[in-house]
Length: 539
Ligand SMILES: Cc1cc2nc3c(=O)[nH]c(=O)nc-3n(C[C@H](O)[C@H](O)[C@H](O)COP(=O)(O)OP(=O)(O)OC[C@H]3O[C@@H](n4cnc5c(N)ncnc54)[C@H](O)[C@@H]3O)c2cc1C
Image (cartoon, rainbow, N blue to C red; front, top):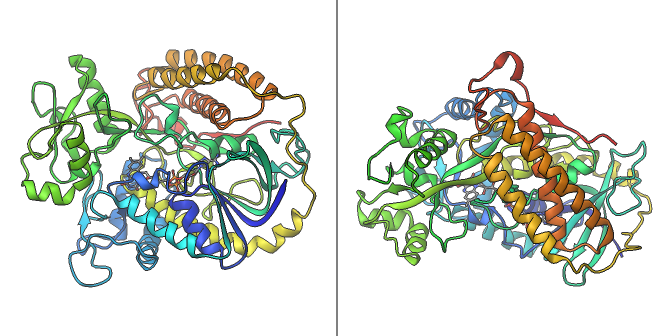
């Protein structure tokens, strides 16, 4: 079945939804999302969105903080553009229905939080459920729109490039650089449908499920990065994976993050003996950037052999803790931890992918008709390390820019993709009876990435990981061509691709910078590596 739409939006987090609401004024929008609409990283974001509203704050301070975190690799034009457009995009969110904590009666009198790496109070938040508030507001907006079709339980398998005629889109000709939609697995029917669109927006979020321990939900398998790479788009800076220093450590807690804001509000990190240790590593102590804090915790864990360190906010007033962190308080209580009296056991976990599909200032990739927005993109904002709460901001600003640019190009692109697409080809495939192979490979990749491509790396570990991933990928490819696709297989193929790209990028950077730390090259080397790591598939 071939379905036509003007704007195909893949993903229903902040990036996809905020783009869709705007594009719907100019044409038909189809949002496809692989689970239920609200299942996204966005819905789990706790801390907030960074933007300059404070009297003691300024654009130049926010820019300075962003560039300092980015450790030499931020694109200054991008940083300036994002920071200066932030307040307007947040005011727009309020008009779309999002309610943030306020200090006064004015519509935009926001209460502002402070987080690690920020030199001023500039985090706009909704208690500790900021992402849920934004997601709910945007979902309500897209549901109201007649021009928007929402298809849940639909998984994009591959992008359709101009002349791709078989399932993977690898058969390309001189037209390889035009995207005209996507092949999408409808999980309700098991069929792969062809979506034909003038503009395709990748808003598929992050890739932290590539690691064994992560704060991310199951959707974060880097599908957008893998699909864009297969379609010939450049991907950049994938060695820069952010590990959040403080995920709850409890056998029953899957992926529960203890927000940066807890440290921002005075939370102290203690070792297993109850000693506050961050001063041993940096004068910024708990308010240092995430990479510094995550490496310090990693070191403490290795030094002491303990299973976790502890984050303690119990010295603060009980009423304040309950009011400021209602969600964290309630969730920890479920596991028998009362954060008003007890320290919280925490460990670092993969949290955010700073690299992604390379874009220009409008979210445009180097494949015509294809845009990437949100965590799946690499815009140049974060450089070698993302400043806390800059990612929701980036998604908002880039969704807006991509909207303006893509509606301008829309009619031109319509003519270019006015062709007949081949449907998905399942000839010679059968139903898989080897689900166990898929789950074993999943587990192996994630464990391998955690052990060899984690917070502290070495060339030897990276090379070992590269060899192993190559073997796993060969197995997956064999499997992919012989059996009907399932969503598990699609995700497995994608995490393997992303793992390979992360390892290759990490091997290319023979220095330590930002989130990439290689014990063989412990220093930053501006002479040779003050540049982005770009990978592009050769056909
Ligand atoms: C626990 C947690 C807390 C965070 N806190 C903050 C914070 O306080 N401030 C901040 O700025 N950032 C925070 N972040 C990061 C931030 O939430 C994300 O970077 C941001 O929400 C990403 O938005 P997105 O729209 O790009 O992707 P997501 O919100 O992840 O949405 C991706 C969407 O794409 C869909 N999808 C993926 N692959 C496919 C496919 N193949 N086919 C169809 N659909 C697909 C998914 O189902 C999902 O709907 C946090 C992240 C986590 C996990």
